[in-house]
Length: 188
Image (cartoon, rainbow, N blue to C red):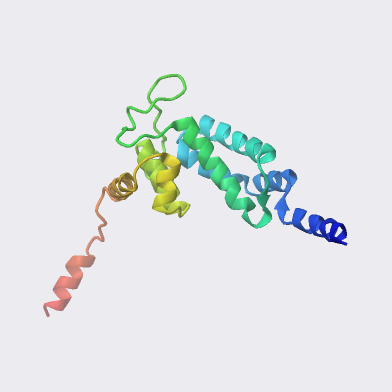
């Protein structure tokens, strides 16, 4: 009697988990988003590609994950691979970060866009910004994954916001004549 219940329960439990092909399907269906996440974290197209492929491989051979969590698990695996590739450290500047060939990383030419501005951040600030703001990881999760203190996360996020605001809004917004017209019309 008990053995028949176990046999019926096992197939149902198996359907709760994502199979390796399900995880591969997530990478296929969300290739743009997962590659963009990889690129924002690594700020390097070659590393982003390696991070994406390593994430797919890890998902294919990794531990089972609940089907409902499969997409967030795939994103987390990409983040963990990016951390391994880049090794972001608190206080490290962009100039101190090194590419695979030992040279400082090249600047991404799209610095006037948000994506470009994010890739110009120092590695640690970039990881904190992407993980905590774009991916909505808690400060505690960020500090655990990046092996630092929660205070370092708060400080890095603040610096990232300041640098992004500075990069995106270097030129003050100007509305030629608008301010002048409103001042003269209100004085009549």
